[in-house]
Length: 262
Image 1 (cartoon, helix red, strand yellow):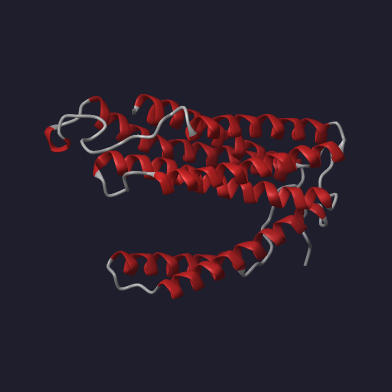
Image 2 (image 1 turned 90 degrees about the vertical axis):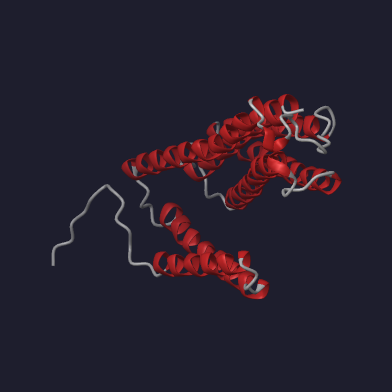
């Protein structure tokens, strides 16, 4: 049988896609039962652990294809970059729905929320306290990540590792301050449309920060193992795109929800 060679990526036989799809279905069903007070938190955590395990093995195989098997050619990288751009575009519209809801409710508050914004009984956060600190942290993390990307393109891996580690620390610190802010909140997600908009928008952004921090940490480990070079480091570049997107979303959250919303 003649083997056909192609510069484009052909997915090798792998058990992870079908296993991941079944596991996502299990998590969805368990989440639905939880909303109806029929779920089991232990089973949900077990499903989440299995899903994380499957995803880790799948990503391990992708790293092997890129680093050791040399399957990520220029054509493959072009497809990966296009896929990452489309993913970030979908994320833009995901957050756009939250901003649309917020402005629809705030610019013309109806009688059901007392024709007042913020809603009656809501004590908003001081935008000059923790929110401003978090803004400075994320802007600083964007600068340090850009420096890390710059140094890896110059072939200076040591400085790139240092700045990438600084970015990860700043990301962890941001998540910690977000946790402190939630602990000090005088309202919850169930307190009117304001509480729903606030915690949905900032909560999903916080989840994206956690995912981005893990993304960068994996790149940090790979960089320590010399997986990247000055011309072949798309895994790190994709994480940088994702992190800068998270930075920009936070700037809009700070201006619109924390400052304008107050």
